[in-house]
Length: 202
Length: 285
Image 1 (cartoon, each protein chain N blue to C red):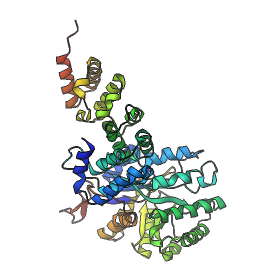
Image 2: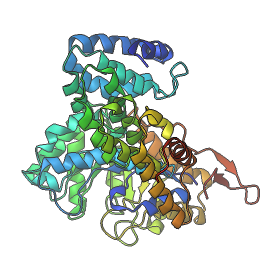
Image 3: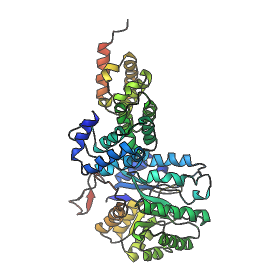
């Protein structure tokens, strides 16, 4: 998803003028983003955007506000995350792959994955999670399975999933089966795909 | 019976309580920031607490279909500790958040000059941020504390209809009724107010501007006493509509003044039980 396509998808929100004005203001007066970021849900709504599958109006508006900043994106992202409510934090996490910040946002991913708020864990495993090292990424995927976050939220799942993740999933499956419980279907499917693709141990 | 608990400290409750509350018809709560049992010693522990009120608690509540809102403030008890005062400078950022529907709990605990200052400063914040205010009344020297509270509210310039004065009882109810402020009652198993005494007050003063909460904090308390009060009202001859006004429409009207009370997608549509003719909550008890 690009900022342009998010902007187009937001064309039908109740108060598009507010967003236009807010974006222009942030470009010339970056500190204004603090209050505009909080108000975005009230002004743009929180409903799903038909033209941007998987996006809500508040998430998209906040991501656009961050991309409209003239500079210091990493500093603003960290500050808005730190002072944000759960919806604001989710929007910062979703903005990370669209900002010119390299890997500077990785500490925010670690913070989000430490929480037990499934909305934040899911948002942390989007495209920007390519900056997570393999051990942290595997733990985060396992946390999704453990806490019921659909694996569809995980970007690059099949390209990154490896033998180590398969071993961890198999161990969780064994633990669940011992307790008379099952893994979620999408995790069982992933484990089946990984087991089929990996060479069998001698 | 659909219930909006306008004052409940869910931080002190277990997740099982959310489940029981949802089963009893509670669909929305306001959690005012207050003390945490153990006194805090720095502003930083306030920010962790406020973050929880706009982060983790709404998530925990949402798992049971309960919508969670908050009020944010430096409480009167801790306004007396100079180590906690810097939190006053941190409040504006929180007052901009979607789920923050009032400034509170503010007011008096021991009626010190420090409390005077924090109370007035935070009423001014309520005006500046266009938010209602939730005002706690002291548990000691209550009647005089209540008079002084109303004087400070009047002096602040905030519209009385945007203020709820809480923890009222038989001694303080009339004073607040005459002020134009909303009246809050915290129903406890045996202290501040009981369901039976509440019913008597509703008989005497009517159902307008009356807010019933369970507070449910660190002392002996029960998050289902809102429901118990609704049932006591019905037993005493109040109608389903009276109960709905007190336990749902009144809190919606009061906190709705924030412009931030988003109750969309909540399962609160009512239908009538064909056997009893009473309204029942869809999906609830």
